Amino acid sequence: MNTTPPAASDEYVPPPGVYAEPVAASRPVRAVGSAAAQSTMRLADEFFYLAHDDQTGRPRLFESATAHGLAAALLAELHNEGRITFVGRQVRVINAAPPKDWLQHLVLDRLVAEPGHTATRTWLAFLSTTAYEQVATRMWQLGLLQQRQVGRLWRQRTVYVPTDVNTAAWSWARLSYQLRNYQPLNSFDLALAGLALHTQLDPILLDGTPPAARALLRQQIEHALPLRELLADLGAVVGGAVLSHRTS
Image (cartoon, rainbow, N blue to C red; front, side, top):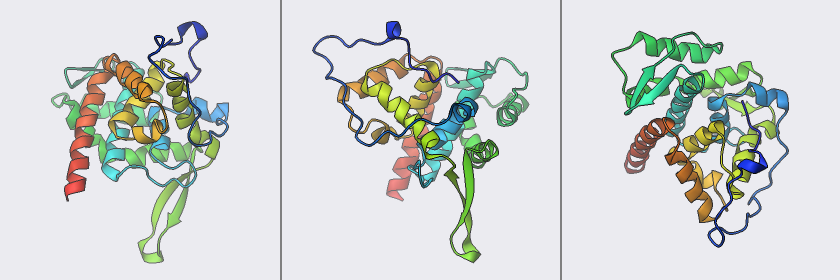
């Protein structure tokens, strides 16, 4: 995973008089996580961190939005690995070779086994039923999360808490810094920011940033083909779920 900020020669320079000066983060930005931890994290792992409090592990989204965001992140991981692509709101397998990661391998096997089902929304719905536990398990295996039992003895449940606050906060800190300074995002961070935007995590991600930062993010996502198709379907699914959640 490349989380290195773009080189100076590649930085986005706002037109004079259009954008305000970069502003400081509205909450403290802690030190970044260890290089070892960062090197093992994948897109769904980082979205999991964004979707939960970096100290307590408390969810920042309602369950359906988190689940669908993680499902989209798993599909985006396979796209980054060159296994699938997105065409006209359809998922296309372009390389069936098994990825090294067990969870990516599992998702790809599902896609290959069901060639008659290609609609992106179908796969978001299907994968969302298991994405949370699968991603949490992968992160637990990597030592990124620890399990805790909460609740009364007869109603206990397992929650996942970051093992390192700095590592958990790194995703937010990195994206926030780049957006506040109007920097173009690399492909990995653009996908991560797109997932945040389309699951309605953007108020946290863009908290305190000038309106131009939000406009720049949306502009970059609009040009992020072919992930733009996946993100658009994710936004529609989450938007519908939010409306249902509010009216139920």
